[in-house]
Image (tube, rainbow, N blue to C red):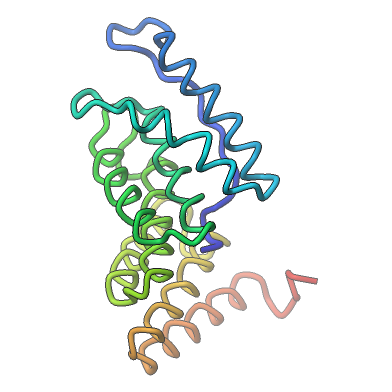
Amino acid sequence: MGALHQRTRTTATAAPGGSAAAPADERVRAIIDRAEDLAAAGRLHDVATLLRPALAQLSGHAVTAEALDAAVLYAHALTGTGHPAVAAAWAGWAHPRSHRHRDHGPGHPTTIRALGVAAAALLADHRPRQSAARYRNLVAALTTTSGPASGHTLAARADLARALHHAGSCATAHHELANTWHTRRLHAGDTDVLA
């Protein structure tokens, strides 16, 4: 789960017509900012409690960028508090909408984070094959946006290996992990970056 759970603040997006974000969006953004602070402090139960009411008010049409950010953060909190099936559903809901959103798209941090949270939640929910498929997509997205040797890409590849191992594809998992290590050594040398 560690590849994409860093704290990222996004700015409020403009409302249709190019004006500043609507007051409702600003309220949601303030809630998200508070939830991110709680998540950074490791208070995931409080994150879920804070975001649940905001997400209950989502309408089926006109999903805002803020709602997508909230859904992904909520899914992260649910995974961390032992509710991976619900988390996978929220992340699975957010990912395609973020992918298609006019202010987001395939390489947007929220889109990529939704994919990572979905993969982690599926693995925690004992669905390793589905998790591995999401991790493969995550590795592809991160390779495109961050490069093949970035820390996020390498961490996602290690998570992919873990999902493959849990799915019973041990040889493939070993191969993925060996390639990940080789890429890391090729770009970082023998220096221990964790020391």
